[in-house]
Amino acid sequence: MKNRVFSAKAASAPYVVWSVLFVIAPLVFVAYYAFTGSDGGFTLVNISKFFSAYFDTFIRSLWYGVLSTIICLIIAYPFAYWLAHSGASVQRTCVMLVMLPMWMNFLIRTYAWMNILQDTGIINAALSKLGFDTVHMINTGGAVIFGMVYNFLPYMILPLYSIMTKIDPSMLDAASDLGCSKLQSIIKVVLPQSVPGIVSGITMVFVPSVSTFYISQKLGGGSFDLIGDVIERQFTLSYNYNLGAALSLVLMVLILVSMFFMRRFSDADSDGEVLM
Image (cartoon, rainbow, N blue to C red; front, side, top):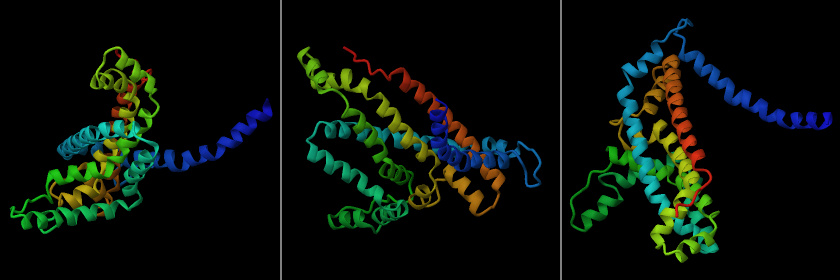
């Protein structure tokens, strides 16, 4: 028994060391800088600035994050359902196509859409040849949201697809035998059982959407500041590590609170009860 306990502790030691060095230690440093000033003394000024100077920016970040998450869910859910009920070869091909953009660097993907959405880009060039006026798309809030949806959509599709492939097809057949239409079967059988995938997808899209900064800079032209932009400037331009750490800490706490409530909602529906 003692040998097994020792072996278990020895096996988990690398993970404990990794967590301490790359998770706990950075968080300790962030907390330290957030509650100290340039002189090293304790202060709450940095935290208060989040609510006094940057709260409107945070609300914009939250709004854009919510919109992009909802759009991703609307697009991903029917696609994941169709994919889960397709043939094996179609599933392999589509999953590869969904993951293919993720193999490319995030910055390159964003730069590519800058060129596509420009007033002289591919879309407007095609519109002008068809006799339409130029549509201004770049440097708008819509372009920022579009960039979020494009970059984070796979993180919504994959969890939904994964959970839907585990739903027993016989349950859909039973619902059909009991008189449910295809739409009713989806609402009463598939939807309740796919709640864990929905929550996972929302978490994986919402968190990076709220904290992103590069998309808003390149597709928004710097006119639509998000909280990630403010944090990035504190570390790279202003060198105000204390304020940057405070903004990061408050943002992290708010995100963790949101994730906590979403997980509670997921746990409440984890049994996947069928509504018949």
